[in-house]
Structure formats: C-alpha cells, structure tokens
Length: 416
Ligand SMILES: [Zn+2]
Image (cartoon, rainbow, N blue to C red; front, top):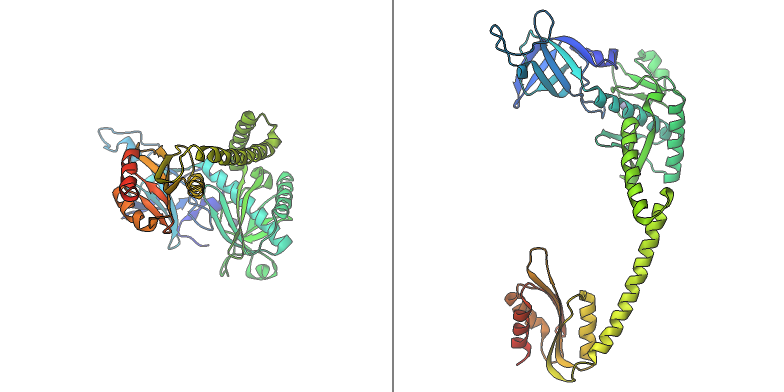
C-alpha cells in the first residue's frame, strides 16, 4: 500500500485536520485534480466511500486567507474549496475540487468528521458481522457497499433466526469494548495467519483484527475499540445469487434508523390504540376484519342484483344499465344474470366514474345472444376511446366517453 502521498488517514485515523503543500493541480473532466504531499482524506476503496471536506488556502504566515485585499486579489470563495471526491491514482491520493488550487500553495484540509466517523462505525461493525458469519457458517463476504445502508453479500444462506443470533453475538463483542488492531505482517507472519480476503493479495497486506470475531485484509478506516461502534443492526435479508444479501446499520446510523422506525411505530400504535410491541397484531386484526367485510359486501351485492334484475321487464331487444360504483367483476356477474333471466337479447352494464384528469371513464360488459359482440367491440372501442374485448358472446373493457355517447353508440349497434 505504497503511496506518493503520505497517508495520514492510516497513521492517525482520528485526525480531522492537517496542513499540506499542494504539489499539482490539473483540470480533469470539468473538475480539478489536486495532489498534496500528505492527506487525511480517505480515498474511495474497499467498499468505503471517499471522504469529503474542505481545503483552506493559507498565506505565507500559515494563516487562513480571509478574502480580497489590495495586494491579494483572492476572494473568500477561492480560499475555501470543497473536496468533492478522493481517489487513489498511480500511488497518489487525488482530491477532486470544483475550483483550482495553485501548485505550491499551503493548505489546511478539514475532513467531514461526522460522516467519516459513521463510516468507521459501519465498516468496523460490518467486519464483526462478516467475521462471525464466516466463523459460524464458513460464508465468504463476496460483496460490500457502503451507501445509505451497508449492503453485504455472502456466499451462503442461513435463517433469520440464525442471523439474529449472530447479531446478538456481534453486539456482545461491541459491548465488551475490545481493541481493534490494524497491522501489516511480514510475508512469513502472514503465511501463518488465517484471514478473510475478497481477493488474492500480493505485496504488503493490511490486516484488521477484532478479537474473537474477525481477521480480515482491508484498506478501510476503523475505530480503535469495538465499543465505539455502539451497536449493529441487521435490517433485512434476501436470497441473492445462491447466497444472501444483508442490509445493516451500525452506530449513529443505526440509532437514526431506530428513531425513525420508533416514530413510525408510535404513529401506527396511536392510530390503532395498540401497545408498542402489538402494532403488527393490531394491523393483522384490521386486515382480517376488512376481508370479512369485503366478503359480506360481495354477498349483499349478489342479493341486491337478484332483486334488481326482477325490476326489469322480460325479453327486451337491448337492455342498458349503469351501476356507478360496481367493479368490473360485479358488472360481469350482473350482465350474466340479466342474460340468464332473459331480460334482454343484448345486455350492456356500465360502471361509471370520473378519473383523476376529470375525464369520464366507464367499465363495460356487453353480452348478447343475437349479435357477435367481438365484432362490435372493435367499432365501439374506436368510437368511444375504449379498450377491451372478449368472446362473440361477451366483451368487457373500458370506454373514455360520456354516458350519453356510450348509450347512443351501443343502441346504434345492438338496438336495430
Ligand atoms: Zn473492510
């Protein structure tokens, strides 16, 4: 892990501020690539995103330049420069900025420490979980990404209950506040160490050791003791590529997640007058009651259609009926019933409503014993901005037209 830039983020992972000399600044794809003699900005690598922060340009006395003066035309905006991204390139650490920094300038770099510390909590927490899963089940961590959540892919799969046991064990290691050791063993030493690694490594290998949990090759930044991780929480597990994909949080992010979810649960509990641990049971009761209600509504609807069918005279040439609130399934049932009771040679049942844009939209079901409905569907759909079709005996779909124009078009085709 040799670098042309002195890597302060490894020497002092808790360092938030440093001074450095700017060696080079070149335009690159609309941004500026700035290299310095040393840096505490961690470059993206090993699944850990790059640090962000600022560079302040210092004057010859080593003070921050504060703005324009007669001798110095630099404006304040030019003296505080955001670091947008950091990458390791050709053994140097390259800082990307939106403004140039003159080579030869002295700068004070400040990293966004809150953000970096979260990364350290999450990265160290991930090592403990991955290490314990490896020890218990022999799973390899085959994918790792730190985004809004930590995403981990494993070569094998276990149950949620087993994962919760692993999570519990990981948190015990955190509560015991064990030291985390980062070291680069000699080749001979390395040959005797059993460690996890995502790929075959050559040259100097940097190992991160967490007692009783993990030994892993890693280029990321870590907390000094497990206690600083606070806690780890597995959020979800899905089957993925013959193994499993986990989402997790640690430390401050886990606490923030806990706060949001507690607020959500509290809101649900208030609405349902349920105790905090009983929100799911309360929702289940509502869903069960809802499906019982739907069944009852369907029964009543069926009975209502039976009564309503009797109000129509028998044997009409064409019968058109509108059931404003009925569903497509219900109008089909009613259309069937009216045909069976021989209330019409052709029966058209409409269910009407106005959609979000204010356009009138109707579901239709048309059945006939004397006409080819499928042939009529084509003409009706063209006339009434409709879609749908079916068999020669029955068609079903929707029209985007007013009730009056639907009734007159249907009468024109089936009423003659
Ligand atoms: Zn790592």
